[in-house]
Length: 392
Ligand SMILES: Cc1ncc(COP(=O)(O)O)c(C=O)c1O
Image (tube, rainbow, N blue to C red; front, side, top):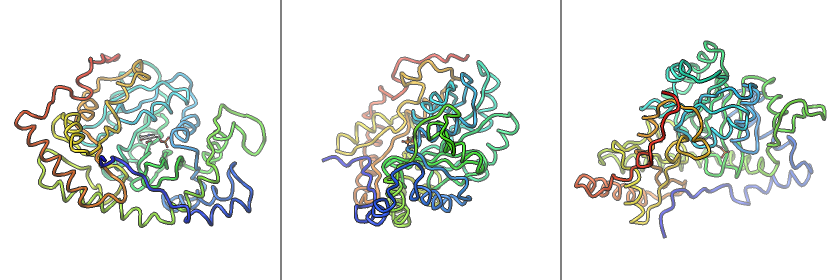
């Protein structure tokens, strides 16, 4: 049997019992019930904000959609999206009525910066209403607080909405003013099955979120605005409470996996792990950066020794058929990152011995690549027919 790339482990049934009993008693199953409201208050403590700013939702994609509907009510306008992200970011932009305008990222951060966004504004093929910076794989942008502040400045200077996609950033992100979305999907460090949360700027934004997640209703039963149904159910909130109860242990387990990888890969040349991963922050994916565009070849070499890997963000959003028609700037950094980034096995009970096995297999594959055996001819993203930029 192969070593899987992910094997989520949510709280066991026994840890849910007291919360499920509460549901039986309250007979609230959804519609911002008592467990959901208390879950939001606990999330607020985690993110170090007041509870008024936190709204939980059915999943991260729809939470991001609702936040964009509020922040940028401009149907048909462009929204800057890094091409180096998961497709959900671009789907949310479309669902909110905006057109994804795909832009490149900083090579070191793997993320959009205010400078790159400002340059893209100058060549935008139409009016721009919003920007969605993405924290790559949950990694903070150097120093999270400072960099999120830079996005607030950007929003003020350009009079644009900024909504941050920090889907994997549960442990890393500390929100400032711009709304931040964090996913609570089973594959994330704080997984509840399906779920997401938006930390907005104030109570007014949160009330508007509740309306957009509930058919456009808030306090009165009238559809006041375009809306979704994407509320968090009480059952998912029950899992959320149990997940928060065990968060300190889960965090330590993910941290140990990260530190084991760091140690095991120390002497392997040509590879790097994200800055601070395991030391200052954790996430549920171990992302290997290679100094050569050999991610596909390495994935094949590891598959041959029964180690699963995943190119979590594929070849970039611009290579996905659903977004092939989106306007975009040239995307050389995204192409390079797609060809040189690989997700390694990562789950909370991944044994130290398994990590050593993965590291040795990587070292062997890269060494044989130096002799010409690591086939670089089918580099992901670069092997496909080139997609012309629609923006010169
Ligand atoms: C960058 C990014 N944005 C958005 C999402 C969507 O979150 P969800 O799966 O909760 O809808 C994900 C999911 O992994 C993601 O990685």
